[in-house]
Length: 579
Image (cartoon, rainbow, N blue to C red; front, side, top):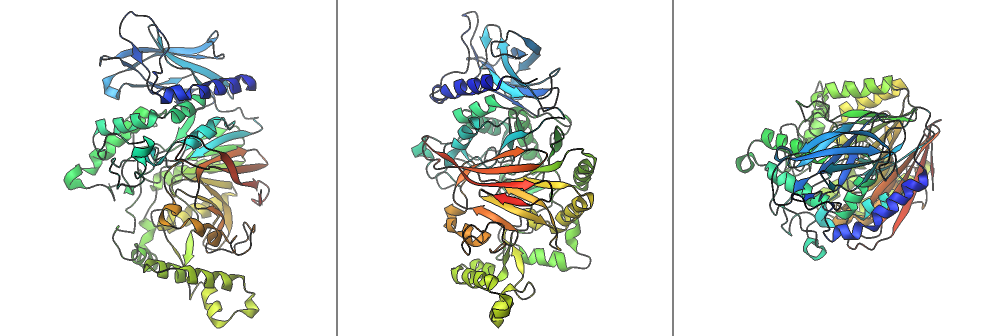
């Protein structure tokens, strides 16, 4: 049994209609009595980590002008009027958790919508809409995928568009917040004052209070509040929930001399994340463990991995190497035995959890929710060398693409050398992604290949849209990757590279030839290096469809959303159709 779709749609329409009032600063508290101080629900409600019989519920509750503990009752009902309450209980919001409150609402039925709220005396939170995971016989699942939401860069229009998309679930792949301060010279802050999007606190976040304040600023956004109140979220962190380009023992944007021990900052960041996200703790004694999985009937199993904090070795790029770390990368792969074998993106414990979980799953599709691009984004060395020296790579790009489309029998000796992998090797450009951890990636892909699973990766971090083949070093296609654009964070276009997409995916050579392998990156089938947005995914036993939804602006709240490209992946043979 499921909630009437029109009832769900009506609720979402009503929720969207009040977003303007929320943005103007109206309190998210229902009218209560005058007995005692007002309980403020300033950051709305949220739900997450749905299972077939339960879901996590979240709110932030605080007395107006007082720091006392707030007792709360949560209520889950099958109707928006709460005439039929099916789950209820108590929870508190206190200073110990920054006045956030979370509870696991149990005793629910699979694959249906529920309304929920929190009550404290006569004060009532706004109403949220959530959904449990579907039963085994579900026919299709629709969900939205997000990453990289920099508050100061612009408005969260992609969140607003997704609220109206018909998605049943939301998946966030990391960089839900950013740690930078409000200095206009900092990344993405140039328009913050003009847009009224100045972040808080003004300084870079280091202390627990800093991180809590930053989450509160993001959660004050009306579009984010509305999307949280509309559907359950499944989230995982990336680096900016901690500090830029983080790994197990440090981060590019962490200075132990001035910001204290990395272990302390990491623990603080994890605590704040768990306070503000509707996430179910996998181990209350170890909040740094967040990898977990969700079964969406027999259509797909979603494996949410942590490729950032749990087990990642330091990136080859020491953030100052003239060659971007390529020398270290090559040395690690050519040493005997290759030292890269112990250079891990995730711990072997998590790797085994991932591959054994895929082997045990009864679902048609195995989908990995992953922070960083997993595909081989390898550029010809002839192009990278020019770019690395600060030159204009246009001529090198053109020469390579022309050589690639010229029939082999007609190529000049110079063109033969250009397409030769030995004389013009393909090299990665981003060693913070899976390209910087090639042996572990190959091990995982070979395992998936031997299992015969239908594999899809959903990835974030890059701020641009990429659709790629996932191939082994021998070129065997194991799956595909949908890497989504950012919600607001600047991408290639901010560096003057917005026009590069066609050269990368080959459509500049042959317009519309998506997936033909004619571009700079062999495994790249589609790219958009200009627009912001999100992914709208629809999964069935027969196929997985991904729609790249883009908004035409993030600099105004008046925007238009449109689908840039649609890819449908067949379960029969992983072939792809484009629309």
